[in-house]
Length: 253
Ligand SMILES: C[S@@+](CC[C@H](N)C(=O)[O-])C[C@H]1O[C@@H](n2cnc3c(N)ncnc32)[C@H](O)[C@@H]1O
Image (cartoon, rainbow, N blue to C red; front, side, top):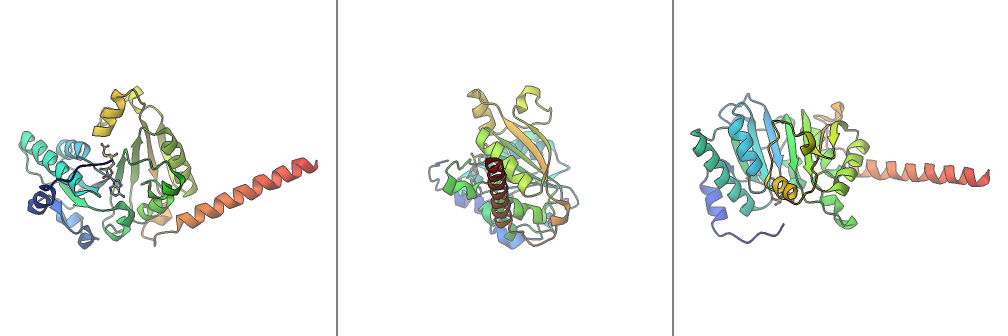
C-alpha cells in the first residue's frame, strides 16, 4: 500500500511511551516491558493504522499486545488510534506496545524467551507475482521463523483467495496443523471477531473474508529457525518426480 510521507510520524513515535524504538534491543525481554509481564502475549504483524490492535487491547486488559509494522507512518497512525481508544475508555495504555519492524527479520526481535501465545496476520500484502511471493508474511521462510518462538496459535485473515489457498499449502508443507479454516468468516462471524480497516473495506466491496487458525509443529519451539524454503523445495521436487514416475508407468501400461 502506498502511503504519503508524514513529517510528524517519527517525532510522535519517539515521544510516545507505547512505541518502542529499535525493536532488536528488546529480543527476549518483551514481556518485562509491560505493566503485567505474566499476562499472555499476542503479536500483530503488519498492524497498519492500528484499527485492530487498538480495539483488541482496550477490550482485553488481561492480554499484552505487541503490534509491528514496517512503516513509521502506519505506526504513528496506530499510536494515535490506540491512545484515543484508551482515552475514550478512561484507561491507561498499559497492555499495548508498538514498534517498527520488517517482519522478514522477526526472529532477530522475538525469541523463545518471549514465547508469544498468539500471532495475528490481518490482511497482509498478497504479493501475487511469482518473484515476490517470498515476501508474503505466510511464506515458508516466515513460518520457519515464527515456529522457532511461537508458543501458541497463528490467526490469519485475508480477502485474497489465491493467497489463502497457497498459504494453506505453505502451512501443510511446513508441518503446521490447521485447526480451523473458513472461506467466509462473516457467514457465521464469531462474537469476538474484531474487524480491521481492510476487513471493513473488503467487506463493503462484497468480498468474503478467509480465515484460519494454525499451530506450528510442537518440536520446532526453541529450535534454530529451520530452512523451510529448502524443505519445501525438496518436497515439491519429490512430488513432481512421483507424478512423473506415475505418468511414466501409466504410459508404459
Ligand atoms: C494491507 S495492510 C493491512 C493493515 C491492517 N492489518 C488491516 O487489516 O487493516 C498491510 C500492512 O502490512 C505492513 N507490512 C507489509 N509488509 C511488511 C513487512 N515486511 N513487515 C512489517 N509490516 C509489513 C504494511 O505497511 C501495511 O501496514
